[in-house]
Image (tube, rainbow, N blue to C red; front, side, top):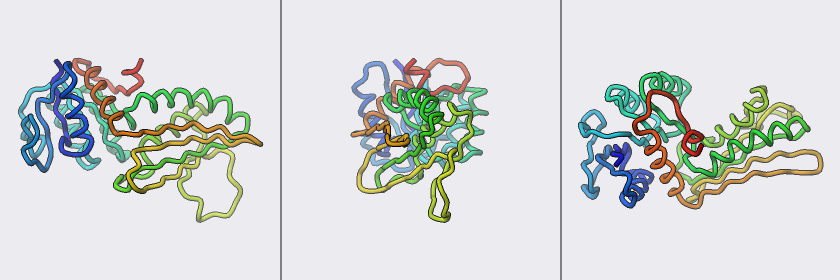
Length: 251
């Protein structure tokens, strides 16, 4: 039995993961952490992570970027593996994630779904063929109106996967409104749409002469992210220090 601390337990994803864990005989949420609590959870909830003294095998974080520094400090202090699902981290925070991974197991992924992580692999193969054949690359992502960061962490991860296959020679462009010129060859355009209750849609477009190839992923429910987070926690429990991602989980 893998015992979990759910950081951000009363958020939408925290409650989703609580439900998934309740029906999984291999895991148990030992404690939750959230700034608000109405007493409806079947496990103890602490107002801040520093007050949590419950022993666990792994922590899952689905909170806000502003809380990540505290999460990393806590996990390093306790020697507690951490599944870090929060997006919108600053470059300084990403550096801190890497530093924490020198002392404890940290799994960080911009997207926890199996489909997205398979897509990351497929895009490397596609980019190596299509970009060299003169195809332009554009990424369009759509999310619900309440999402705070734009573009999404997943969109950046998709762009990074493509750029890595191309020697990291491409520039990311988020807004072309201030310029009047032809599209440079080595750029990846990234567009973010926000509205309604869209869970998450990502289109990666390779546009060439007289043909277009599009890779698309649509999440119809947040459950795909919750299931991935729980599987990641099972994988990470007991692991030594290091920086892991979902490709390690799916093999």
